[in-house]
Length: 397
Image (cartoon, rainbow, N blue to C red):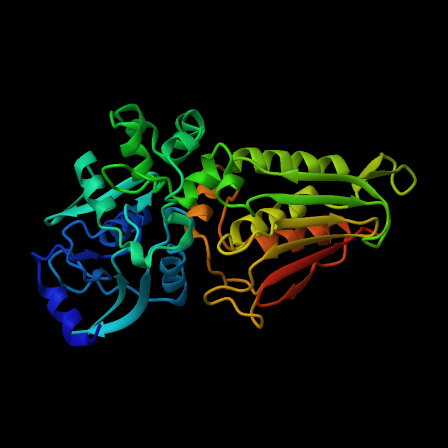
């Protein structure tokens, strides 16, 4: 947006496409505003603009615009509080002689967008939590042609193929604010639609997301939706197999079994000579294994492939391979660099965060590196190809 367009919006005190804040002292209010603009309930199909450093009457607040301020606002896009991720631009601008920050928020292609489990919308000049009817209107706005694969409908599936008890008992409480859940009188179809687990139709169809997260048998519809685990007694694939599993099922079951399997194969050495107290050191830190394996489940490609995530545990190393190469702004050259991340399956990533398997987005590789270093393991090695990604972890010496 050019300066003239921004100046017009800045001075239009009646527009519901604009919010003005003198500072970012209340960051949750900022996030609510971003969420509301992303939902675009009035259907302007134009970006909403948040001016930081301006009073409510449009006068300049003379806020000091620092790099840290810009970074704090930019981080709101992907810190996991607003899901799915909003599309926003943060810029330092000078408009009518006032130095300020402009946050431009594009309407989401996959509403409703939530901040901490609540759907925020603009109702005229004010911001409010969406009603049941408003959420339905937002769901109906989704543009199927632009949707990521993980929320496309599966025509061959029906709601009977979902574990609705798991959805009610586990997923809803992890995804919605408690007070919203307590006053929720919606039908199961409306609840599924609101969470992008079903399409908005007279006969709702499950989406890829719902089958992956709460499907009774995800592999019936997405054949590659499992993890192949091999424990090799040696350093070559031709050596004897000590253990093998095909880990599948709904996302909570798959990740629970995966965690148990990884934990069961970790060896712990005891050192009673180095220090007065007994020291117990695992050959691999469980947190690093969890982060890298969960990343493989989250970032893999599920479309047009029957390949699973493969975890091959040798005596001297562990190899984790997932189908699908770099995506979006992530390339072979910048892969693994701090702050460089993108999401092939953004709504699956949201589900994993809701369920507690991801605490913060974009830090999995850095956390794995830190845990490996702390445990005394060499750093992970990555092979990034167009069709797959391989990470190798070396055993603690």
